[in-house]
Image 1: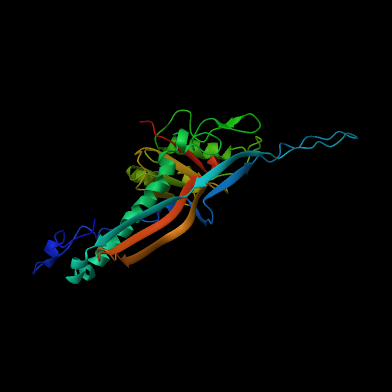
Image 2: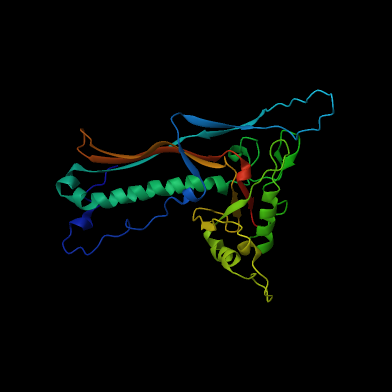
Length: 304
């Protein structure tokens, strides 16, 4: 339905002081704190996890050397979605100069709607981190699980067996567990935590934990070990689209973790409708958010 003069009646009145409701700021590009953006030129993208080799055995004198196989462990798939929204203004409203006076405001409101959806889509990867089913990764498990299968028959965990709230102990445990991650064949890999992602409800807790020179909540003069050791070098980032108020996520330096594929960048178009004379304006983009390697994060859903 087109925006008509009746809907914009106040704009026609003399002495109008101000229009409001579409000039709010917007949370934008918070996904860049989590995802690496790459371009795509196909309907979907797939990334294959390879298992690598096992530990090299000792070769006895005169014996044949052992051969090993590198197999495909699983495939992560990124299905692109088209996001689009439009508005139109009647020919009569345009004749009365309402388009010139309001068009830019509605355009900004349209941009805010597109940006909002993009951040919701991105945050959904973390909001569904503890849920399997449609949100499961290539290995058939939720992003954060205690039983990610390995090709050697074992498992690894990137969430604690008992969920814990964000505090000094739980954050240290997360960093210790990240340092103990193994690859698909059970070999130790050198990963570390790089950044803490939190909802807005935990920003004050994170500030005390990571910025204080001394330990938080104690009368002792003990040093804040995480700060003095340079843990989480990229600090913390608040994501305003996380829905669980006590869940926290520690990102790692795993090379193929969270990926944002951009199939079609945000584009806008304006055209007149011949039949009605209405002016139509639309915005469209196509992208996907997901993860390939669950070792990219260690997270806790919080004790509540």
